[in-house]
Image (cartoon, rainbow, N blue to C red; front, side):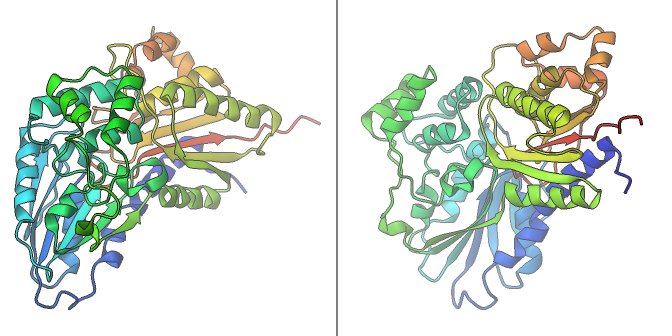
Length: 431
């Protein structure tokens, strides 16, 4: 059986992963049954890069009355007739996100026990719901977001801090909906798919504390605005805890996650004739460290046939982090891929693609990039120094100069990072 060419196949794997997590496909099976509301109203709220597409899917599959508002990233809106779509900034929040968060809180005031709040949450919601606790300002939240993004903190650590500074996260949105029922549909972009870490858990109880948040701040040497430090040290930022009676009628359903995206890609690779090995859907750590480790594994497969025999594809997902040390244009996927390139040193049978399923790696409108055996050779011929680009966190600058970047535009979903390494078989030895 002849095998598909590496680079077109890698792109098909990425496209299959993205397609598997489209809200039009994964939201409808989880909607309430027709007629289940009785006399109650359906109020739709939400936030995240996929929230507008989720809202559109709700409208198309719900025949009864509804109203609502969701906030998504600039450029990620889709047309809706009954649910208002607001765009705001990500990853650093802005005034549009603040105003939208205030209006969402107003929408869920004075509800009855007959009403149902359908909350549509996907990755990116932490920045898109920046309503601060009393005593804090949007400028305070922006400063904390910037510091967290540059610190190298994991997504779980970042969201722990965010939950204790927010008027909506850490279960506060669900508490505000009481006594209405709350059904949250989650599109996961976090390792482990923990609801508390998807958009910082606006509708689920939070077992962490202000002291936990302070420990994270100390661990990463994050400078806090004075008002933020006061909120954490005083305990005024405590979130809604497990057992709170206001959350008794709140339910969550996971509608899409990184694992199903990896499995969709795996099916395409197998059909193309490659063995597939999923290394994990929750890989974390410094992006450049993960890239170096994956490069070592790829070389062992290519040169020793261990632990897998080529030809094969190695798939992984999760969310790496980047400790910003330079002034380059970077994202965690291109940083990981550039580190992999340096680790495999142009091995003739190793190809790779790394990209974010939402179409945005870091703060650039670039999803990621591809790597081939000639990547470093072409870079050196163009006068590029790959190690210098890595040191400056300039993965986008590097791959863009080579024409190897991946641009998708908004994909309208978000199931985190997608990494595929394709390892070809060695040519048969001559007789």
